[in-house]
Amino acid sequence: EPEPPAAKIRAATAKTCAVILGKPAILCLVMKTILTPVDFSALSASVIKAAAALTQSVKGRLVLLHVVQPPVITSEYGAVMANLQEIVAISEKTAARQLARVERRLKAGGVKTSSILLTGGPIPHIIEQAAKLRASYIVMGSHGRSALFDLLAGSTTTGVIKKAPCPVVIVPPPRKKK
Picture 1: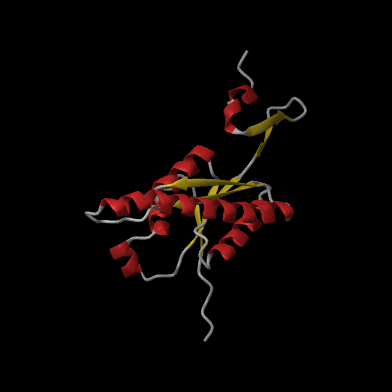
Picture 2: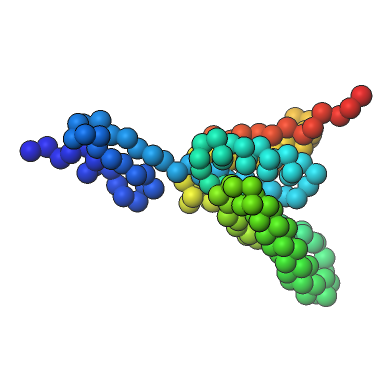
């Protein structure tokens, strides 16, 4: 006797499947995960708002991600390096408070939300978390710089788009009033 279709679906995929009335049709409800990297810039509020709206429309969960990027310091002075750990620690504490505040506000609004705080390079961490969480979408902002700027200096958004394991939704900066 052939294996029923539901048995072929692995339990680890976060899918809940049910055979409808004993027929081979299967209804799969998938918990959509929306990963939203935030940098707490002026654009972050509109990115979080768009991500929350998408999360609610797909009845999913929103995961806020902030990556503290240690400053790049080129110096021959050891004292500068000693202060680097202190600077990163202060940045992490500040970011943790900001994430907690945003998370509380979203939960109060009925959005299933969690947050992650990491330290290091933003692009690798965003890509890694998207894969680890099996994100359905990454929602992030674009600061609206020129393509030439992105080509020369690079941008987190451009780097994520190139390597993302899922679709990336870009929230543009607000239009400047004329």
